[in-house]
Image (cartoon, rainbow, N blue to C red; front, side, top):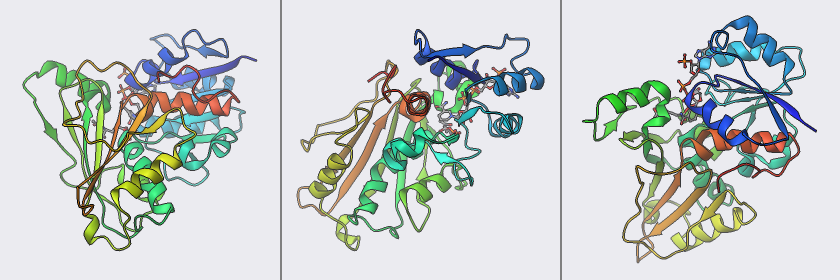
Length: 308
Ligand SMILES: NC(=O)C1=CN([C@@H]2O[C@H](COP(=O)(O)OP(=O)(O)OC[C@H]3O[C@@H](n4cnc5c(N)ncnc54)[C@H](OP(=O)(O)O)[C@@H]3O)[C@@H](O)[C@H]2O)C=CC1
Ligand SMILES: CC(=O)N[C@@H](CCC(=O)OP(=O)(O)O)C(=O)O
């Protein structure tokens, strides 16, 4: 069976990478709008309503508009934007956390943000297992490649080669905090410190843990073992072994990857740990996650077409 797919925002950073992952796959047929009509509301509405699946790779306002276009039609939606991540009636498209069956049967799926993917992957299983408390004031220190900011940030970093590091979100209240809080199962929103480096893609999301001061916290080895058990059935998410490397590098030449690797680094006395997610912001952080969700919704192997 061939499923028709319309990517709204297909000329953007996320949309192009989704099309790359679907290229050559006979299970899907893309509905494509030419350059003159790709932002035309009437053409988009017609394409959305004709498709089996619409994947929204748009800014939030255009994503809300696209969902309005779909009303009353059979189309099932995967929204890559922030617009519906904590909205009623939407399923959070993180199959390992939300449940593969829940995603497979959903009609409205909101793709997680890139940073939340790294944070939730680390914290949700550990809070659920009672190995970390839900009411601790967690912090998240994160580094992203500049493609995380879409075409505008890519252009900025490629024009201004002198930017070595960009800290932002300094006024707090980043749009990713609500989904991090909800899907990690936390009482308090984490303090979130995002930043960008001059690499096209790649992401480091770190949660430092002063374990000795956290009531009820488990040891670094117990945290690592619990994550390894939780993701044991996953081909996308893996947990690195206990050996502590001298360094971990994000390379500017990183190729597209849909994998997510989790690390638990612990101090020798077990009083401190650094939980770290390493991923491609455009892979499991966006386009790879959208294709994983699409596969599940279409009744296919979740990893089909992914770069693992
Ligand atoms: N980049 C990333 O790593 C991630 C992105 N996301 C989210 O995915 C969504 C898309 O982001 P990204 O691909 O990076 O952004 P881009 O800016 O690279 O792409 C957005 C695309 O949408 C097009 N567009 C703008 N307005 C409309 C409209 N009214 N109708 C149709 N198309 C329109 C743009 O057109 P034009 O080409 O003319 O500008 C552009 O091609 C955003 O919500 C983003 O937050 C989520 C996770 C990670
Ligand atoms: C580097 C950079 O700018 N990153 C983006 C987030 C990218 C992402 O996850 O997209 P959503 O907007 O869909 O959540 C930011 O911090 O706003």
